[in-house]
Image (cartoon, rainbow, N blue to C red):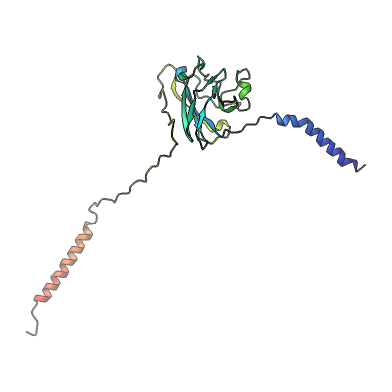
Length: 248
């Protein structure tokens, strides 16, 4: 009977593997992008002012031909764009054919990138993802629930990655802020664009030049004392020379 125990254990493990193996294979595999990542999304009240920015984190230039950008409701083609190594490219919604007429939702929305083969490369979402989104199935393994907290769905809000090429596939990779309130002008209608070509370089701030402290006159008493001592020594010397000798 003892010899049957190892056999029964092995059979049991095989059966468990047969049951749970397919389940393990269907678990979401969320790998960070190694080529193109989304770095910024501007979600203002005015649809025409929306834009997003992509970063090429690879060591060579990449030409995006046949790539697309997706919101929760649609996917539109990106213009053929070459992004140099370690560089950024900004895309305005007003230049994309087929962009949603109402723009991106301020409370619950997603933005995703697909390559030329239609494979999801990177995405982010704010609010709660909805299974009825048209592009939910394509990006479901990348969506967060909950996503990034929208600072104010009724304002000009911005989402931006804290560090380039540092993708942990978590909402904590991102920060958000509000640019302006509905009904009034935005504090910054169009944020300054990052360079769209050429490698990113760090701005080197030269060390502060240390200048010699100016003289303030505090050293004058010391100099005066030296002069007086010199004068006294000189007087004593000359007096010795002019004093007649007792023997004369």
